[in-house]
Amino acid sequence: MKLCRFDDDQLGLIQGESVLNVSQALVVLPSLNWPYPHGDQLIANLDAVMAVIKDIRDTAPAKPLSEVKLLSLVANPMNIVGAPINYQKHIDESNVDDGIVSQRPITNIWDWGMFLKSNSSLVGASEGVALRFVENRNDHEVELAVIIGKAGTNITAENALDHVAGYAIGLDMTTRGKELQSFRKSSDSYSVLGPWMVTKDEIEDPNSLDLNISVNGEERQSSNTDQLVYNVQQCIEYTTTRYTVYPGDIIMTGTPEGVGPVEPGDIMTAEIEKIGKMEVAVRAA
Image 1 (cartoon, rainbow, N blue to C red):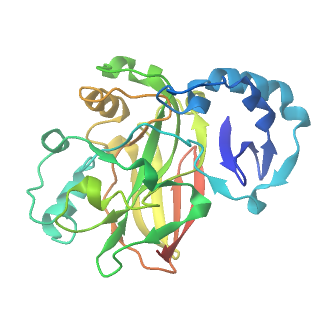
Image 2 (image 1 turned 60 degrees about the vertical axis):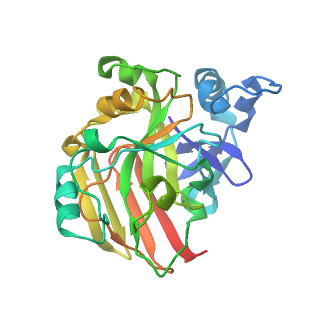
């Protein structure tokens, strides 16, 4: 299934160029009291929600996809995790472009570790990116985003996909500078997730997907997830050596070569094979 959150927090099922409003399926979500459990409750109860969707989709009202505002399907992640320098050609370009990484040796992902982004940075495709510090360089970074479906820690690579709910396109927007990654990458709207989530049963191998991004029609990045230094399973394993992951957590698996700056007024078009395509507008904050 391709599931989205749209307009005023409606749950949608993508069918071709239409969105079916399947919000009725949310009735199966549990009523909760404080202290609330960790994780996004839609993703935590995804199997039950999908079972209802299968029963109601034939009679669900439809709306043209072009007329809806697409938000992040995940509303309440505990963690947004980033994988730095996880494509060799991006490591290579970072070593020759001082504008990408300032005053820090470029080595390998296992030396740098994963990093966290603020949950308040999360937006959907239709919300766009609001650039801060426009006097600095602000770069696009297109990535395969993995959405965790089941909590776990010290997860092995061989069991990692058992903990996945689905996949989406991620944009890890980045202000360049000497500050730590978590600070520079956590401005509001600097984590874009969209245009929807494709459930994991529809993607047999997440480590063999074409991905690309263009800005105003000019291609900037184009690669395949088979070029990841740490593949999807290894990213989950590496992350959970330190963190417990919860349903709805997002792991952005790293960006390939070709990162570059964007300015207010630009339109970014990102695409990942078997997931889809999204247009994201850039504006000043």
